[in-house]
Image (cartoon, rainbow, N blue to C red; front, top):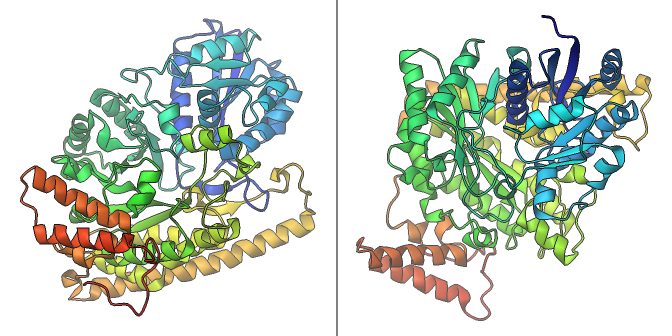
Length: 621
């Protein structure tokens, strides 16, 4: 029997505004949205189960604004044809996307269309702050339903209320986080996935994190109790996508290494590669101690992991302790990175600027240390940001300390809170400078030489280097927000900013696009020539530098990583003490050296603590 009515369900993952006021949108975006895929799959399951009754069909459309223009007028006309029977759901909305989400919702609500909004901003604010904090009252004034928590086993209620014209102002499921085993797996039809770079999809194998990093929102939104999908669910997801020709995935777990089912999942993925001939290509996120889990790195390689993102965050233990990220051990950084390098896997690491001990000088020093001593491929810089939903934000909010009022700037690229040692201008300046400091032509050549020496994928590294060395300079956005061919439209400028004359807008847009792509082409050409020359060099496999050298016990005397801050010296001393107590046979000479250097740095009047090396002073090693 044909349905009598058709419920229009539009799922929109909003983008946010760039510094020029235009929506950040690309012909092809780099990162697929797992939130959109997860909610789409849940909605499709609702349609299959006929949750609105046998006489009602659910027409589902997904829009990721980072690669698709949101045509509000067309949406209003579509709903008008169905007498506004449906729902526009703004999904996965982060704090920096919240202003844009409200701007999309405003004309829809004015037309009488039901709208709901969910994601980290809503969930984080309701979890950590009072019910009206950080502009939540804007939703109430417009009659937007706020959805806090996860949609598994909850979305039926939202759809039924929308169909009945009885949407509540708030759906708060933060205290009822669902299990994931057997729930619909994240999925988007190929027509949506095709709008991402490399035809890549995403999924989460687990949610939640046991750690307590003060800058993190995940622990307060997804909880500290980890929940996991089964290997059967992951196989179903992979086969579902492979039937559409999709075989590249970003596994979005904040820390896949702490997924209790990691081994079963990796074994199943390896089996799919080897017996079902599915050419899986995976990117995962892990912590800095993952290499200590027996067989983890090796099984990741066998399962198809080609890139790994590591939450390095900082190389100063004092900064890590201030952020409650005590699980990061700088004494393990080289061992961990060399383990991934041995498998030919590209390493990307997040690095946060703006911790309490940071200054422009110490940041420059630390970047130089990383370049010289750590076998890391890609370094991604972020500004320490008090995101609503994090402990950092809650502390500042309770103390009444002024923070950035424009939520659009909470994109971890802009400075949103005061710093004890840097002005806003200095902090923003060193953030921009950091990219050019790390991605120099000389260091990119070094990265390519290291890749050739370890037998890794040179072509893939060139692609990643192009994006990370040019995006901030050419587009003024973080590379993770990037894509291919930046698109703009006069109608997408932020409300309150002047609408530009099309006769000025379009010629300038075309000229800027051509100019940027000339510079982009020159970077691509330069890197390709570098890579070609290195691969043709017979001595390339024999290349060795300090970063690629095997870890040695005497590194505590020679590495800047372990000698340049009091926190580093304390970390080395602590490791030696633990080794002595557990009978691991420490080198007591190294223990004495670390202790002596710690005492030296704490002496009254000593000026070195957390400052750059003095150029004319002689240091051990």
